[in-house]
Structure formats: structure tokens, C-alpha cells
Image (cartoon, rainbow, N blue to C red; front, side, top):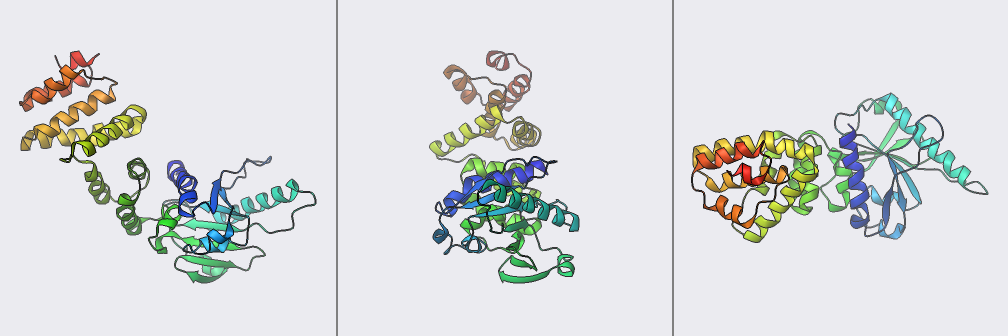
Length: 309
């Protein structure tokens, strides 16, 4: 689950300043000098008044300068053992803060657990009080302890960091809603990491199909080429899933434009930069058989010239 919670942490780090208008930021905590006892991260409150108008749970952080956050993504274990470990990590941060100050800090570090849903067993060991959609106070505790059920949260821009922990149909709903609201790079990362349904992933990938507007298409091609050059996992996924399906579809339906695009993606993945003459050669080719042969050659060729021989 490293990639999943890594994506959630990255989203907290990147999105929190914007959705809270600078009222809160995400910090990755230092490792404690024990065995590895380290929380996922903590939110440091910079302006409490800026959190008041936001959707819950943000306002609950107004009266604290910091909140420890534990993130449980789809597929993670959420049982009594994990609860106790989360409490231990919160206590470690509590000790750190007391030791950091002179005189010692006398406050209580809050704990927020973000998970897809509220586990049924939690009712049997803790008193729960729902104070907003998806937000529960967990008692009895000497500190603020919230359980945030991402599947129950409303779809709000300021809640995007929490919504990444959704699962199942709720995750599909979030993915479709958030895709047009975030930049292309973030959406592609979401498609790569979050375990949404194949149907939802395919529908969202269609957003990157060719369009008539040459400027939009040029931007999309640049993004795809950059991903292919710098992300082996993305490139392998495109090669294995997108290109093979695209070739078959192009041959069957006579879509020369799609075949040319697939050829360019492979060349980019191999690190080849076709010259202007080569680009003209690709555009001028109207035979699928030739494009198919070039595509096969591009998989193993030593240069762009060899691929288009």
C-alpha cells in the first residue's frame, strides 16, 4: 500500500495550502529515536480563522496548532491493532512536543484517522458521535480524536486530500467528479495509484484521446511523452494496455491518425526525437501496414531512422 498512501500524502502536501487558502500545511514528521514509530504526517495550523468556513473536518483543527493524521487507504488493515498503533504514534508525537519546549508543552496532540469507512468494531470499544457527514468524535479521550470516513464525506474541493482515501463505488464517484477539477498530471497520478474500477479508469483515460483542437492535442502529447520518458511504470502500462489495443482498433477501423499517435508514443518512450522530415514521413503515410511495421521496428530499433526504414 506504499504507493496508495504515498499518493494520499502527496495530495495532502500539494493540495492543503490551496484548498485552505494557506490556513494549513502538511508536514512529514521526523523519525523518532526508537524503533520506527512514525505517523503518516501532521497538519500544522497557520491561520485558524481560515479553517472556520471550510467543510468538516477542517474547522475542528481551529483550536490546535497541530494535528497528527493517520491515513488508511483502500485495502489497508483497519482493526484494533492498527488503532492502537495509531494511538502509539500519536503519543510519540506528544512526547516529542513536550521535550521540544522549555518549559514543557502542556497541550494535548489531536489525532485524526482518515479511512474509507467507519469500521463496525469501533462501536464496541469506543463511544462515537457524528458531528458532520463522515466525521466522528471518538471517546473517551483526553485529546481530540476524530475518525474521518472518506466514503461519507461530501464532494467538496477543500476535502480532496481526505477524499483520496475513498474505496469502491465512492472512489469511482470521487474520481469522475475530481478529474475535471485538477490538472492533468495529478489526474494521471490518480489513475495510476488509486484502485478505482476498470470502467471508471477507462472512461477517464478517454479524456486524453485525440481532439480536433491542435493546441490541446499538442499539450496532451507533451504530457504523455514526458510521462513515458520519466515513468517506467506508466510507459509499460501504456505499451501493454493502450498501444496493443490501439493497434488492433486502428487496423480494424482504419484509424490512421491513432496509429500515427501510437508510433510517436513508442518513439518518445525509446528516447527518440524524430526530425521534421520524419514527422512529415509519418503524417504522409496512409498505409496501416506500413505504420504497423514501423511500430514493430520502433520497439527494438537503435534509432528513429532505423525505426522508419
